[in-house]
Length: 634
Picture (tube, rainbow, N blue to C red):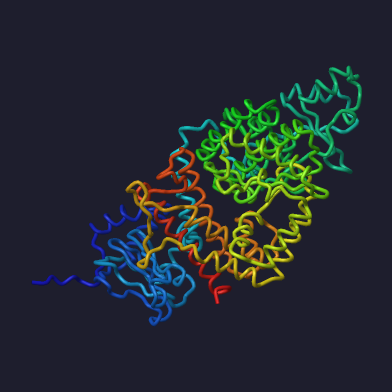
């Protein structure tokens, strides 16, 4: 005896109540007002689809309906070859087909039920009406992957929030921080008057300006001892004689992270904030890290002043603690990897300085360069060394031997500080990559012109280089050679693309996530099958179009603009990369490796939000790889 299941029904009152509770657990409904969620439910029809029943296909023409999966799942297939990576599984709690419904076009894939499937559907007209009523719903329709990413970041932030001490996120625009009216005096104001005003206002700095030239300088309480008290400067002396000139300022759109990096880089404690031409605030280090025990400037200052390796080891350990604090603040992967890379640079730079002095080397005569993820300013927690050395002048055995001994000491010191020696020997102590400027130029040209498998591997490692310490002038011609020659030799770009296409995005034939088994756990390698594919794609297109950026996020945006791709498409690549990076960081920050792999993530450990955005991220990664295949794979 068979039971007939009605194909379409209007939700009953009791079902409406249950549906409201179900919908408000998932985005975008979780961010919408209750009356707008009810509007969706009351406007919807519930529809049943049997196993393998087609719901939508390109032949149906312009999409007229938007579906919400209440129970079961749906598979979308592009083309006839599922093996080509054209399938995607859409799970309960998701809307489809969003892009086609918004664009008013036919779908490009065939959607079918996987088993019994119950969906709510609304008309496109109702969808548009709801978008006018509800901003969260409208935002979701236009920026779906970004909305998932934001909610995932919030979940991760709550996970680590109890472990941090800071009240202020480094992502906060400076314009949103509490404003203190800056204290100004003219350049001819006597020091005594300026100090009196600082004392009365109980502030640690005073700005010097006039109407003609604007901001001229700053005097802080830290300047007074060395410039006024010890020299016994007369308090009637004009402040212009003791102020600091060349003041660094930021705009209201810069973030607290930008201010923290500026303070650390220039050794300053106060940064003026401007809105147009008007100075509207002055940010101090205390404002940024009011209750945080570990601050960017404190760590970097400790590293820069460390007298020996033993002190450096202690300082380097604080970087991991600092990274965990930043996750708790809600700092995103892009900013977090930038900050980690910056602090790693400070560690490396200090070790280079200490050992250069020990070996009697002049920093103007060589350049210590970072490669790979560090060269892209994308370094995560669990990372080994990737570095090389460039020296000026003619190469000789004696000169090279001198630099190799120095480089070995630096590599071993980095290892002691928690940056393991590279198993592939991609380190400055390797004679093959401790070269003169002329040798590097010859090496780069050879790799591009010949393009053997080994050359392609070298290009993927060494072309993402960046100065850490030493003379930046030694890298100018190296950068120009890479950009100009790679763009001029299409064969080299195609070989890079062919090599990159050997890496497969872990999406199964039915659109699920393919896993690897490590320690009897179903895992995904977030680097090998995720970020590395996006990094390669960004590098390939950048070399092909003469884009000088090395950071993957900057490259993806520049590539999108160069190819005239819709903004939402290349922002999806960026979001996918940053989400995969954040997952890597969350795995690594607790020093947990599955089967010795610090990039392995157990799929079952993800919450529902993260699992959905992981699939979205892998889909965006696959879309970018398919674009490379279309452009270069033939």
